[in-house]
Length: 316
Image (cartoon, rainbow, N blue to C red):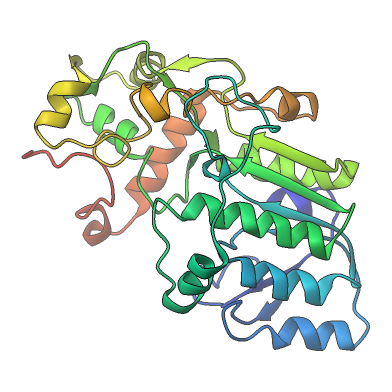
């Protein structure tokens, strides 16, 4: 939103008005819920409202996309849907690009999820793939699909990347996971959002893997890159993946960002982003993301910082 406004665009925001509702007081806001009340959208369309572009950041259920994109199909010229690299059926092949097959979910299982809202690690990816289908159905020949990896930076409420700069800035002996050469991928939310605006300005239709950095990065390069932003005293102790597993230290959850590159996840952190680079995706330095993330974390209330949502408990 900040980047679009800076480039002179006019925006309408549609959300529930519950989280960070104070932001962007001068931007038009339509209030609703994609689960059970999109009347603000349908009423606006009935009144003849038109938009150049719809940017869909949030949908994980195909029905949400079918209904909202369907309602806006005649009121907008372009639809950008935020999917996920989890949409791919196979994460075992390093360097896979946008032509790789996506996951499938049966109509019965999809209907069950629509009733229970029980989104799991197993059905999340196939559901995102189905959402992509609904976006294309509503906007045939006028859809952009971006499949991000881990989205990080200031404002991230998941704490998945945040764990590392906060832990490193606190100093001491830092436990580092697996082999130092294990690959990692992530993207600063600001790099992703700014690229979205350029994509829709260029009407760059198609599918893109939206993650980073620009060239391959290892977990050691990431941790040492963050380490370079703090003058504190610290050291890293590398712990093999097998030992971590034996002691119930989970990749991605406790040792965040990192997944051992083996078996079905051998290519999980090595997705090809060449098409995105060709379409103008750019990246700010890791150091900027790390320092800004710590600044965001430090701005949170004490009670929030006392309960991180990811990472390894110090006692563990």
